[in-house]
Image (cartoon, rainbow, N blue to C red; front, side, top):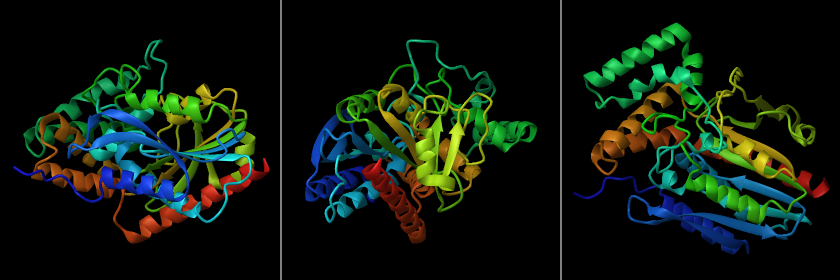
Length: 367
């Protein structure tokens, strides 16, 4: 039977367009090949495009695809930036480092997680020490194992989840689930038991293309949390970092700050209890760089709807077939949840990202 997997958009098309835009802008490109292949047998890789002086003391870094399917928004923004940089110079002593689809398997298969069901944004922890403990998740894990997509098993799981939400509230329940857990490879928001390919590749990219900087601004691009069509600019870390005041002075009231901990809360829709965030990994690895780590999070649909769609996709890769008609229906729902087709959503998120990046490049030119 022919594959029913979605044709448009596709990982392969995004990669080809990014490569063409990088070449047109005169960028240097480096490929980091992934060991697995996409749904059509296509080669998977993370690509890095470099513009400006590779030895510049100031670096602008943009990362797409940490949560694979969210990479379609991020890729479009990176391609647009490359188009823009065809017509103007990168500021003096500034290097632009674009990390394209850092979780290529997740983007290609339209999953939020990677090839091992790992949420990459929970994977940046020190695996030489005891992994973080999320004991409250244990009471919820069975919800995500049901073998029915629509049958009695799913209804029973729905009832269990509804009971938890009635007892704890929607936000508290999701804080438990989304905080990350490190025991169950068949569960949701699994942080892994070792560093993933994406984790290792991202660290190699940082060492090769960012570690020599004096000052850097990084942007990790995401979708799914917050008000529909509203791109939130955030900085997320375990503690206030050295360059925080500079970051705040550049963006002022536009900047939302999340300091993560087991007791932290946030009204942004982004989980403040989570461990293993990319932003903190960058801070930890680039200790000699005055780093300002940012996240752009573009809101889409209601979180409870999104959670239900995530459960469907989780079922699909545990018990179903991503290449059949049911798989296509679930992937279409995933795509709409994380990259809405609404033209105004796409225009607004692209415009706001462009504004944020222009302010960053202007600031780097004068810092």
